Image (tube, rainbow, N blue to C red):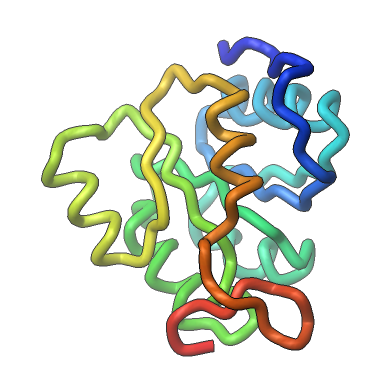
Length: 146
């Protein structure tokens, strides 16, 4: 179970989507980030992630790679190809941490890779940095193809 973030990471409130088939892990992350002042939604299947991210107008998607329906790499590709979500920050939250896994993630459009068990402060720091790209007129990160 992830530990609670400390007060040393000042992060403005964000809209976060947690995509994880492990309900306990997903709910733990949800509680931690809600307690830190963020709006959080959780889905447990990859196929639901794109619509959920669009409905939430998510700032970041915290994405498990090992999902039962479609893997996180495919979820990332779908997020990047949808005009509603193409600019969202995607952070893989996974036990898959080999160099090849990280490379496949980058190729699919994943911005960063955090190994489980997560450090909530490090994830919030990464969310606060965003994608490091220009923002579009709606204030969302202007990702590739947006």
